[in-house]
Image (cartoon, rainbow, N blue to C red; front, side, top):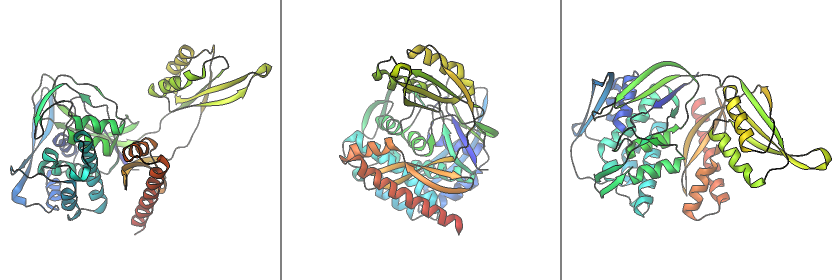
Length: 397
């Protein structure tokens, strides 16, 4: 059974904190160095050290990535050439390039230019390349094929960059989170707690929800700053667990303004419902109505039933315990002529049986390119089919 990971990030995330989590979870720092040595970068230009530190009452691993200081400003194509020319496995190269692709698209939006023209400055520096390539390699080395993450904390303030002084959260960080539809929460204090590199790693590699899992080990990575609280991130590593009992909640409604249904279903889903849908029916005396149905974990039955009673005109709901079988899902990114698009891979047992583009990602790319949504969706679907064919061919070798 595949491993899954969950990033618990009470003090946010940076690239070196991510690496600290991976090393603390069991990835040997020597293996990290070996992975970076596969890049076409002089060994004398960088070094990586792991140190056990205390952050308040908590032990953690701090990763120090030391690089030769320079003024190199790389474009996306420069970074892609470095990664593509490496001796890393192709899936690792593709995921690392996808992370940088997200960074380029976010920076381009913020600065009003194109991804190809963006000078990466800080995020194109060698330490960011090490952070991103290392994170992708570490997840693969630990066997984590699905990564989840908590809502990242965002703080206020200002930071000096190569572009000048900018407000926090950094504009590129916000753009990355917005494009990923990520949830956020207030930071424990002012300052930058989620870096653009950390945001790009989360946006590309993680989905923002806590999974049911059987825990096997925890990796704790340290941030560089000392705070009044433990400045750490924690990577939970384990195997997926079943969702547990599931219930279906139904109610018939024939006297509510139709404009309100969208708001009700959005609130139900935000509260933890697995799905919500409407079915038209005809009630007694020939009156048209709808059945509002909700699929949810059994533990949320009371909360969601109370929400239906409060948010709609109904006077009662029906509860049914249901059983279901689920295909395993895995998020990947494909390249299209309109930009990167997330696709959802569908696994039945150990078989990859299909992939489908994420609608919101296609819609965003269509708006940016001023193209019909169906054109972008078709391009993403074609790329998704190619990814499935390639992955299945690799598996059969």
